[in-house]
Amino acid sequence: MSNAIKIHRFPLSGHCHRVELFSSLTGINYELVEVDLANGEHKRDPFLKLNPVGLVPVIEDGSTVLSDSNAILVYLARKYAPDWLPTDPYLEAEVHRFLAFAAGELASGPGAARLITVFGRPLDPERAKSVAKVAFDNLEAHLDGREWLVGDRPTIADIAIYSYTAHAPEGNVSLEPYPRIRGLLKRIEDLPGFVAMPATKAGLAA
Image (cartoon, rainbow, N blue to C red; front, side):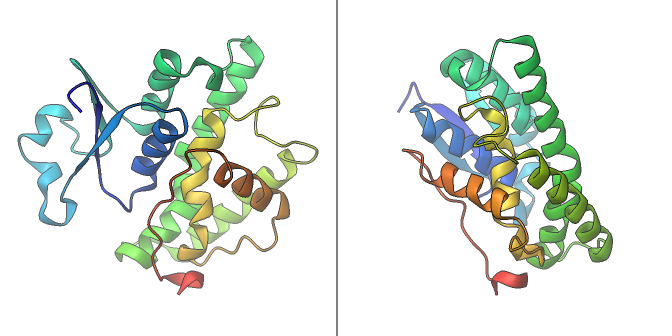
């Protein structure tokens, strides 16, 4: 697999999973490189030479090294799977709006709630669940009459929101009130090449 993209990842990270998921769905040749977060591998060399910020995921594509999961999705789509990132100015802007949503409300809502229950992070669970409710209410409303988040086919926007949304129950955030969101998750899971992120028995998923 010498010509494979290396994805440096932690298996329970939704940020890492979205990169692996997109690579699998689009048939990109990739190799997973496990990073031992529990023992601080991400905070010392040689990992810090790849990403001085000390965060996963990081990809190596030949001589190209890139971090930040959403930036990686844009890069991979532009280079290997252009159908997943529209060139129409409005549709492309809409995709980037949902990338910002994934990095903002989704990370600080259901993502943070899951950090508390799965990893024991000292965050405010009520605030995380409150942010999650607003985020999912807005997402549910956006999906009214839509199959996908942007346009009439899956894009990297759908991939960016999948992991932390699908695993929200692990952070005590129920998806039961959101049939459209659950429908979107099912459509993503039905795509050829789908790979799941490992589930944890935490929160409502316990």
